[in-house]
Length: 346
Image (cartoon, rainbow, N blue to C red):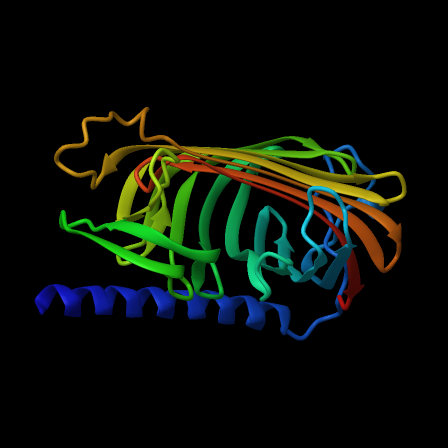
């Protein structure tokens, strides 16, 4: 009973933290000031008139995507229609004052697909990302930073099959369960929930409209709240679908982040690429886990490219690869290519 109450309190705290982050983002976006598109801090030798002025700078873009495909008597493909519907929110606020820079972003990306094989809408993408980072410039391109980030999903997660299958569920207490159904709930809303915090020095060796590079090296903490959530870990050699229960993970160690972003061709093409690695010298691995800090290194790679067709439509490509060995010891890879219709409010 004590364990159940403790888990309930942890989950309650995690949801409160999530809601606080979302409220902070909404409050920042709703601050009263003249709205301007956010820009990037130019190098010191650029004319003063080209610099982003001190003050508040806002961004709010609402997007929607749709795709449709219909097959009738096509060899190797089931008859029927495939729909994909998506929605995206890209928001942010930047505050500049002399050597001080504070950036806050809130991004939501949701996508649902229905196919002839499974005649219901299932989520294909579900991501909520909040980040706030403060940078203090000591000398032109060098300074110190502090960062807090949150990643989670908005809706519950299910594994859904076209027909009944047998799930072999392995629990953390050593017990197992086999159940037959066409679906299995893997996680509640807002879970797994990942929190990150870090601080240390940073450098911006490149600061142009076409390419801005930011390198951060610091000490960071990472917390993954995943108890009572599950992940499919099917080995393919058995008729059952293997499922494992995840654990809460708490780590601290050295974090390195390299980010590049920019726009070119009259801002018709924009991109942002990020590579992040965190080596957890401090962790809560299980007693039978003999992996060292290098083997437990977390890696996150992401790339977003947007090709603007007209002011309100673009083709967007997004790539993500995440490896969290203490959670799931394999790369989780996602690719998305969408035609997006967007409207810029700020």
